[in-house]
Image 1 (cartoon, rainbow, N blue to C red):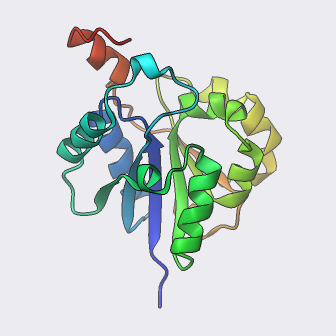
Image 2 (image 1 turned 135 degrees about the horizontal axis):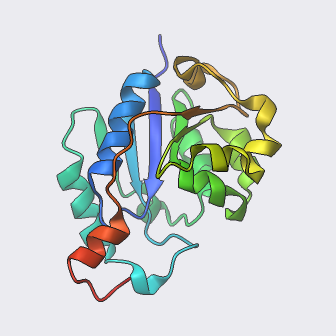
Length: 192
């Protein structure tokens, strides 16, 4: 029996937008995933509480944007009480041991990865697919995380979900210009 291949797109979704959908559709196609789960974070430890829309509002925006039969929006971090990606991954792997999880992130997050709790353990826990964003590709590929795990880079995206971690790939593809910060600012939100 084939193991289900699931992409995990964690984030604040503050609010969700077309860029999240764009990355998810690319992941489904380029990584040949069966599903993508959007993990709406109750509170990103690296972001200010002041800039965060209420959790239910962010979850609702994700449900509206993620209208695709193979994309699921999840509040599992809120239900499990996890704050850090490494803890969420451990619980997901225990709950679904037969799934092949792949962490999905934008290039901007690759440059911030060394700030994440136990970031090296995250890279050793699941394969990671990084999507080019804001033209940051070449700059972040010279950064700390990419350098430390340079030997674990997979060139063929379709092979990534089947690789044992550490394994990661960088996908240079058409970029989407949406940004949660720009959306909040254009709506006149008092939160930054």
